[in-house]
Image (cartoon, rainbow over all chains, first blue to last red; front, side, top):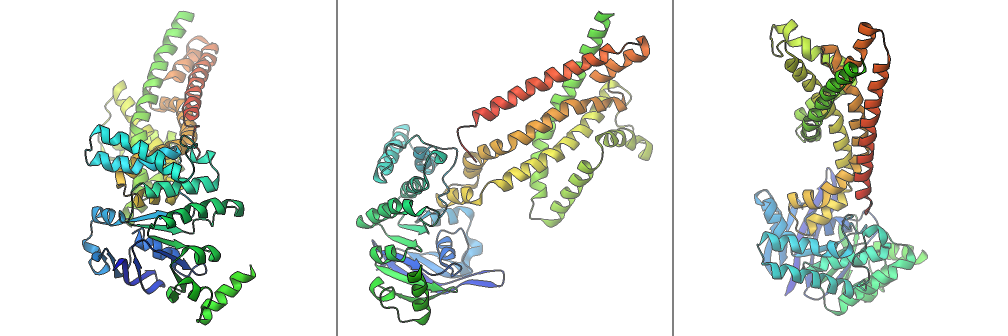
Length: 257
Length: 219
């Protein structure tokens, strides 16, 4: 059974339809890569899944249960949306680390606030620090705990951002072009961290321009164009042997670069 | 003579300080309210507040002092300020607070709009509440952004307090100037300059220290 099921998602900004009847499903522990040119709707899809945008139509199921139904969107409170978000994590293209906090504080802030809101005992709060350190070790930054974002390279910032997203243990971790804002020599370290997550069977959706990386890491690939899913399937099919003319054209252009 | 002058200047200085302090106390929070008004999604509220800010920032503070002090009585026969020193001080405070709140509101608005949307969105996807995002993420970045322009306004306010003399609030410069007529001496007026310089100097130092404290991160 699929962990995530998205049915007939539609989203428009004004008169421009950005997502048109997008449906997808993703089993637990699998990795989905979404490719396509700029403006194809990939980022909007991720933002809808994290409820930074409200889908106009469609529904989202997590673990077989209805999480979000656009028909009921008026009945959802801010708190409802907030708890829906907790199923997803999002790593941004531009990292968006909190600038006044150290790497470790960036990782522990949200879990600490959540625990405090639930009146967790003091001893439990101390554990978050340990957990945060462990997460930063996992992304290879155990020696940068007390550094502020501006003291880190782009690649390091993105790795902190990944640790921060992991801290809340989301069921599905989303990456929005995680290496697009990085210098070429820094993309490797971030891709390596993402690959290591893949080995630990983290359920992931990755929007990316790194076609080769998508082929290596993903179980499924979706090619989007103009708000619709044009082609989908395992990478050997979509990337190595595309059948749709639009996919072929996109991949040809990529090969030229 | 020196004794008389010094004690007169000291009295005026206290009036100026009072005007300065109470204006900040009122204008800093009121400015936040006005900035929320000008950013409101309710169109009439936004337009109304922006109109107010335009009028207040676009006309001389001295004119506003005169209108607020004399207007109610001469136009409607309302004697709201009374004839006492404290009544005139209240009228001056009203004009100063309104005027500075409008300037502060624009600084706040620029500061709030300047914080990248991504900072808020990062908080959202981490499940933080609106108030957690404001107090734990946005606020300190906002303070850091607005500190330099706020310090400019605060230092201007020190000098602007001298305008209150047009409605007979006996502040520092009025006290200094009156010795020109009564004794034919000008040095008390220079002396007021020293007061202003020392006071603004101390404020600059204070603001520089505050800015230094927030140096550990960049926005």
